[in-house]
Length: 107
Image (cartoon, rainbow, N blue to C red; front, side, top):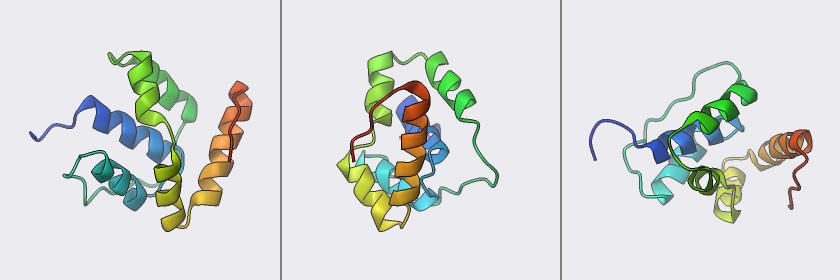
């Protein structure tokens, strides 16, 4: 892999960071997905503007289905969140986002 991040890495990193995953958890998710150059991923301080993140995701050249696949929070991601002690926070964050858009989150 070159020095530039792939679209899949960027989407995964920005989405999961914006939803409350820690730098260590995001790095683990990326490594499970086959990206091994992020062991020193470090989050910036401050908070994310979820609306801006969602608009950015919509503006990408990737098709909608690909983006949805990349940002899907599956059992492995939930397990990683639990390992990093952030599962309750992440579930609360995802639930509040889903209520905003009328989605259903099963836990």
